[in-house]
Amino acid sequence: MYVAQKLNRAAVADADEKRTNRFFADASLRSAERATLVDYKGSGWSRGHMAPAGDMPTAQAMAQSFSLANMAPQAAKHNGGAWAHSVESATRKYAARASGDVYVITGPVFVPSIKQSPGIGPGQVRVPKYLFKLVYGQDKNRAWAHWHLNDDATHVAKPISYADGNTQTKVIVVNHSLAPAGGEGCLSVSTTTAFTPLKTPHVKSRRKLHAYLNLKLD
Image (cartoon, rainbow, N blue to C red; front, side, top):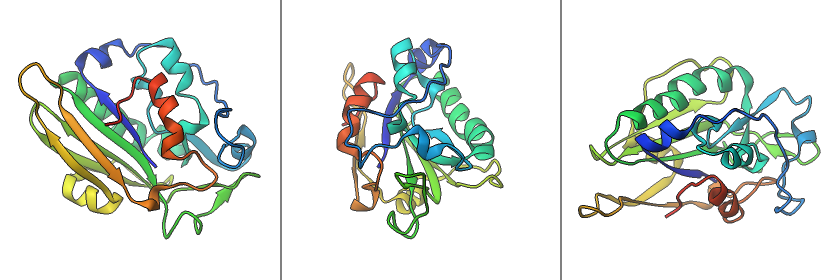
């Protein structure tokens, strides 16, 4: 399970929409796969954006970013602290400075497995042990990863190498290359079956959401 984004200087400059905070269950998903507001209520876990609300360039994209299909249960202090500042904000700042596109893949990691991870609410939405964000800057052909324990005690940490992040998350980059002048960069990914979530949306179901969010899945 992952969310893929393409950011650049123009996209970040345009991401000035007012945050809506109107979370909602995605009715396009089957009930067995759909997280609900009731699942999170009283659970002690926050609804953590995978594609950040702060990246959204339009009112429609902002509204759709609050779909629970774009969320994972996240420790509240971590969500609003180390993750928001040293990961999400830092990635936006990098994209705002970059001369080319920046490709970002974000997702949860379930340990030892999805089925063995704790669940919240009637739907038993699974709680990830870790959260990751892989970043690839096209202009400098440089990549790195953020790997955070999903815990309130997690503090700001330096990114790890892309190779280490790739190993940890099991997200395999098939190809990332600069296209000829005037063309688009390419970032292709595949995921192992370990990322097929239980009681949460699966990757195929997210394509509609990605279209709303102006995200890029290659």
